[in-house]
Image (cartoon, rainbow, N blue to C red):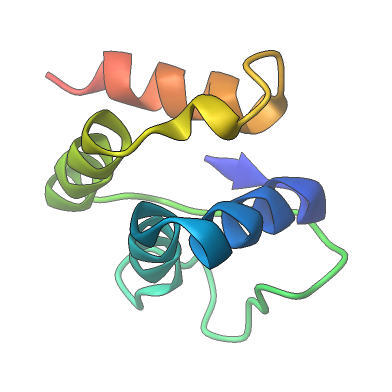
Length: 89
């Protein structure tokens, strides 16, 4: 999953208002998920994340339990989260 700076800012916006946004960010910032240790959340660059299956399940639970309706459903972030959830076996 590749997130743009705007995608990461949307997660920050959710995290500042709802706990599941912070939980989502914690998963994406974990060492098992980041593509490189120097990938900086605040960077202007796109960052690609590789989620092991157990982390994908954690992310799925967060998305399903939290009300992510505040994400623009046409956004890149919403589409990626939906695709990820649908791809989990």
